[in-house]
Image (cartoon, rainbow, N blue to C red; front, side, top):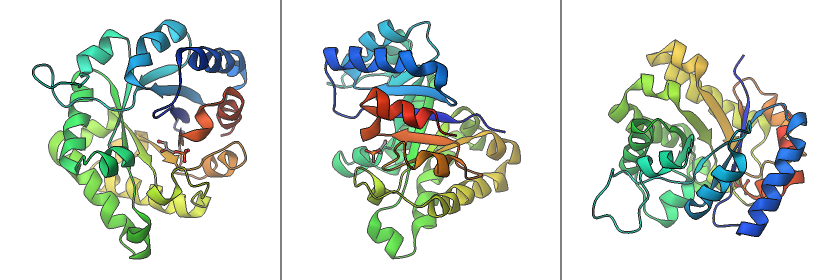
Length: 248
Ligand code: 13P
């Protein structure tokens, strides 16, 4: 049995005050969590998150990472900097990075490699657009996104990573994939990995993301290949986030 993980992705949200309140609330309710729990925060708040969560059972990390180690890359944050603040995770390839900031499959693969190089667990996001689903090419898209990483880092690299399947049409729309729809893609991803390495396929956690909330988490996490969730909107309120951590 794989351990379930619920990770929050705060995106461009929060303030010192709201983060203190949110984390105090989550820490307060952690005894009832059935899943492993992590939060991914805007870079600037990571020192605060580190201070508030050190010694707790809650993992933490960033929402992106530079593919570079150091040098003339204005505005970037490297894996070694994230490690300096004890991060354990780095999200790579989120659909918002891909669609709004022009990150390509190859950039995501380089970021995945940068995270691993510094001992961070990459949370690799994959997922299709609505028009891609309607065109019947969901598996092709997800395959292409995974192949870029596998080609650069090798299949074994996925055993110290987390994959998040996030259909773009379900992100922030209130429109969740049905448990069956999500399971179908999760099973496809696991089978694709199993063709190369069954042990890696068995081990890798595949999270679902896209309008997960306290009301739908139970049935999503009950599916065989869904090992938890990557949560946007519902990760911003302790009560909502904890309701998801109590599922599964
Ligand atoms: P929502 O939970 O707000 O749909 O966002 C999902 C997401 O993008 C997590 O990375």
